[in-house]
Length: 342
Ligand code: NAD
Ligand code: TDX
Image (cartoon, rainbow, N blue to C red; front, top):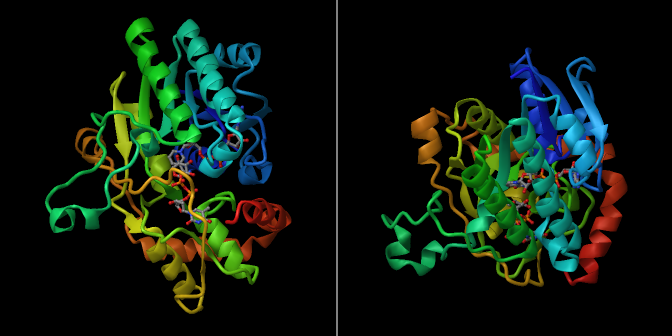
């Protein structure tokens, strides 16, 4: 694989993957296809050598553009998406357009030129699991986690469009022998994450003198993984994965939202209870948890960031040191949340 296209490569996770490839695989040239929506930022690609990375500003749903780029590449890694649940509750249309039509455009072009395709998806396509405290014996030994056999059951417009895009890819594999793999990853954290998302919103709130905002009681559980580990997993699947297979990516990082807010406050030298409870998200998924044994056992992948507290402390330091990266957007993001009581 000499030339790869990374869609959404100017976003949080896609740009991490571009840095990962440039640092670890000197033989590979990356073309980033990114529309630079509110979530995309050229600065996320700053410092990368021009002869290794080319940025094409464009839409993944632009079929003519996608066709012309895919014709000249060896592989496509598809990260581009509308990615925020709360936005999808306000206006689902861009989610349908980018996540469904965009994926369709890419897989049609990959089928035409027989190009290797990797589809980046999320654990949210499986819906949610019961909270451990609601299971007999706190769920000890029950081991209920998502696997690639879990039935799809998405809850929000965001997760429904991601689920739909996964199903398109699976159908293209079966019907047209598309050379594709899929991955469904749990919640990512790390530097460069947009400040609309849970962890960076709370860090930048504290840095701005605003109290962190917890939806509802904060019992909802997310399974946190560092972006760097997501990138190494996607590279592993792209290069070693079996065509047609789905791999779940996770690092055994289950925490409820209240625990995360308290830990952030503690790490930032504040009192543990210095946060506000705000209106809950409609349809709020209770718990996500990933069984990543297939990826670990069959492809030999393991995560490196196994200490969540350490990873969080480094992430806090990054937002502290890079205030120019987020400050201009902070007021508008908080205004939007305030309008819906959050
Ligand atoms: P993000 O919102 O930070 O970045 C999305 C990127 O896609 C941006 O650069 C944006 O400009 C670009 N984009 C959006 N619409 C586009 C279009 N029509 N054409 C071209 N580019 C477009 O998202 P993220 O958090 O980095 O997520 C990346 C991918 O990983 C998504 O597919 C998401 O579903 C998936 N994922 C995210 C998480 C998570 O925790 N954030 C977990 C699992 C999977
Ligand atoms: O201010 C907040 N307060 C709060 O309690 C925000 C923004 C969120 N939350 C809660 C909602 C969730 O339970 O925190 C949890 C995490 O919220 P998000 O960061 O919005 O993530 P989530 O909805 O879990 O989805 C994320 O993981 C899966 C990504 O945004 C998706 O792109 C990915 O597919």
